Image (cartoon, rainbow, N blue to C red; front, top):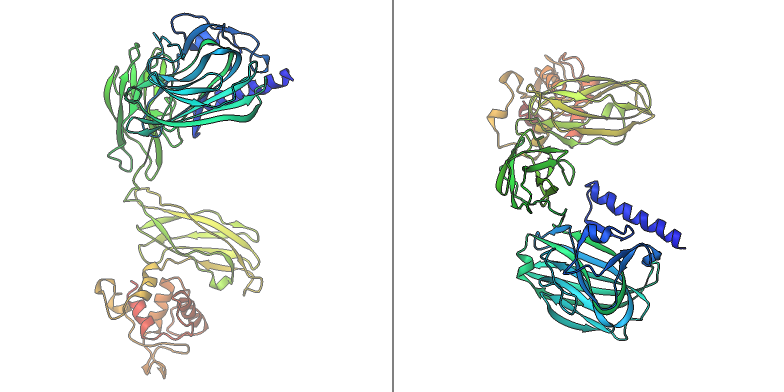
Length: 559
């Protein structure tokens, strides 16, 4: 049973080490010292006035390594590793297993503002810091050695293991919410029932004003036999700082453009080792490091500014300050920012996305562009037949689109497109499909026109009496006649009320707008009638093939 537990314990420790060292994005980071290496105590902690505790190879959880606490000893051991104090929203969770062996004395854990020179009082508390302590049937919250007593009879059982958990959350104005739990445990670390849970709120300006803090565990008198698995979990803005490494904060990100931004930070304490380089690092993924893009902005302590260049437009970045000395590199609190979209780059906008099942002759995908650009089209994914893509230039507000040829009834198609302007600025990407051509669609193959008519379509919702002459077509393309099927230039038609003279102008508009009326021969035959009806369907008017005053007005304002 002990071997099985040991394997699980080693896996647990490795997993947390991987999460911490790989700088992956997680809501919290955890550091666990299991004392399985008998050098863990002196390598990772500093004692108070003497070294009464020892690190043994067995006797701990799962009979692995642990801290041995002699009867009558009185010590507080503080982490060499530090933790930043970012402020409101910081959450620190401390936990450890304690084995009870006698009825006189105390145990405790929490954090303090110094990791050297500590002395402990008779309760096992450091001079400054926030924590908790316990005896047999009760205990206390610690706030700079001012104790707030709590109780939980009956007493803790001699010879038993317990897990103590203290959660401290910074809530602002130098205040901290404290939550303390004790769980029953067996010798393999399997938790049982909750023995007690206690809460309080304390004010501590000393801790709030510190740049960094340190975790601690302690024992005083004859209560404890063993201590094992000291664990720290940080959430919010708090981070780990290795012993001797500098302390750095991150400045806000300002002056963001499509390709540049400004930030910086401050090295508030070099912890005795001269800072050789400092700056900010950024990437498109969280927790950037010096392996990513970084600036170098001087050396030593103090405030520095950083200028970021070469950024990609419309992109979200993660940034944090860094500082390096001989003991290592540390990072400040992470900031996020998004670069501006390049105002000169074209922007494609969907008007009528196309999906589902369609008829070959009715399949139209409408979109528009903010700039004149060259259309870039992916080779369509096709389940039937080889499709040819005929790309076109995009003119603002008018005929923009592509033509696909070779589609077949029953085929399923999808593709994407974007556009590139003369300065090689590429637009966003839009997707079309998937759509399927109906089996009973006319013809076994054919063309599929995608025309951008946003400017034309917008006229549907405008008052036709409110004319904007700047948007009107040239005088030689203005329609003045009503037209319908059968009309022919030079021939009287009852629907027009006179001699037909503008059928070819209507056909020119229909072809310009992508509705494919066939030859511009001045004869409104079946092809032209079908184009009129497709246009009317697009405009969401009755598809009767009759071009009346409203349709003429919309066409005249489409140039």
